[in-house]
Length: 329
Image (cartoon, rainbow, N blue to C red; front, top):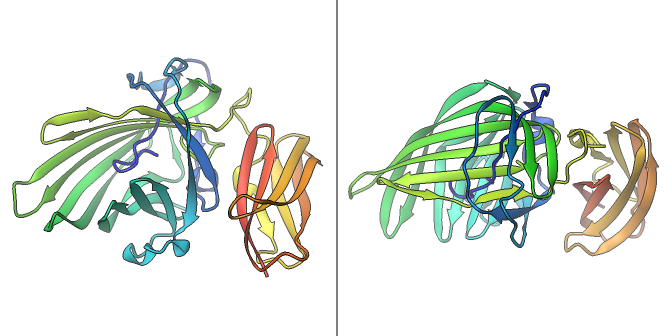
């Protein structure tokens, strides 16, 4: 992640590439998906501009932490943050977001026992978004901490300031867009006003949902903290494109009774594994090494005899893994 609540990951490089574009279909948060995040040593975010090579291959590795996006409706605290539809927990913080065709917006955060509730959400990404695109968005929030009431107000300026190649400890990614976010905001309460500023860099692939790398720093009342750089486990391919167009993966019918169709578009012919699990990860059914064709595909998964409830369908091909929820009646 890349929020001031949930710091994230970042990177830089040089080679001729097309200018990548981020879209809602492929880059917005999606309930039912997950990723593993690793922490590396802090370093400079590198240069901006066209055809940059960001080499972060030597940032080191850590034990990875697994995170999942869930539907806000399944969260016991969802009603505290009206309008939220996607949630992610990165203890001690849970972030609440508004996700739609045009934006990815922070709508609130539960930090321990403190609920930061946005009266005006903060747009962290707008779609579509490509090199040299920029916007400024105002936001405001309220919260109570230590018995005092706080009013937060400020703005974020988001700019796609570079594109090129990103080199991480787990491989090389082409066709990468770097997004820079600069936040300035204040907390007003009965005591002295608290001033904040933060700078957040995040590297994205148009074909991968979570940012690949993120680096952030925050200055509070004149004191600056640099957060560790973080990166995710999304395995690259040689040309920077996925075998399967992630935004094209759909389950039908959903809810299902005896059979669910896994429909998607593939960029090339390969094989895929399809696994059905319950929400705890216990395997229910599996279809190993299914042949998929370039273009449209439809794989059928048997759900006969399953207890009514929610299940997960995971589609894996060429190191790429996509998960969707299905309800069985």
